[in-house]
Image 1: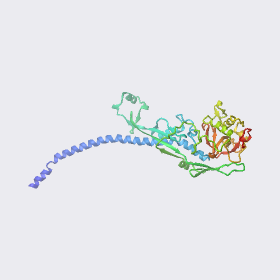
Image 2 (image 1 turned 90 degrees about the vertical axis):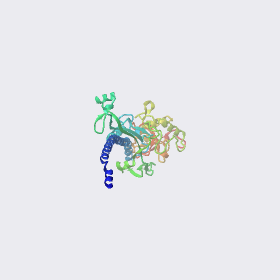
Image 3 (image 1 turned 30 degrees about the horizontal axis):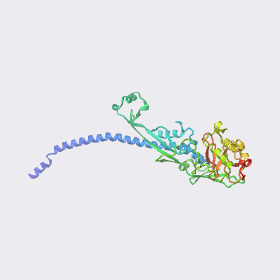
Length: 404
């Protein structure tokens, strides 16, 4: 009897418990559905954010590819790329079709996003770039929550105001994925190797080494572009460069050493005047055939001609006539000497087509007016594979240095 009553006491409420259980199950189902409704948009938003950041990373890296490709091309032709600036790879930086912006836009598009605004360039040479993107798809607003203007945009299909969600439904955006990223070009240290002096005292490039790898010898490039891409790196970084990029070549040489205008070797006054005259023209425009500011700028030989003339020394006007005029340098070059280069078709070792003014032989620095696409007059390195030799016009001058 006691056992039977106990059994009834334990199981006699089973129907009431069953109803409670069903109620709990129903409540659990409702909560699960509500949680699902919350989680799905959240997951979509997280997915868009992830895709947006991936696209931003790609766009920032892509923006630097024109500059990296230019550096690689220089190295494959035996030229030291250190000191290369963005102005030499992107000449139309302020236009929507500029190469670095177009590359960033293309990389963003490949990742389902749009580039927002312009690529921001920082650093003296333009080696750091920031890109901001937004995903092409979005989370759309519920139609009953649209403003009158938004409802009108949707009705008239004003596509610049609309987007599609991940199901393809067109609507007014509530949120988009997006992000910003910063990338930086990191060039390896490159060193030009020269031959011993020939009977005339000139040394000639015999190799270019970058990052410990020999990439060029006089016969041509020794390393493929693919391998050079592993040396000429583009890396994501946390911060933009603190130095503003102004789109113009700096008035210094950036091969790891700055130039403040100090001329080594205690040169005589006439050399100082010639170099100061050339230094005053740094930043002026390159103008083919130009030899004065009245003409808008200078070409390579016009810069040399004007710098000497302003110091009271008259020398021939063109590169082709300046080369045979000066006394060939058979020993180490000095500040004020001219350095000549083979510049392509129509020029050769005996007929160089480009000239610069030596300012710092210890660091192989010259002042040059390079070309229209190269940007304004600047200080750069003459450690190049197409260098032909040096001459000393002052050897012919009546007001030459006392030691000449």
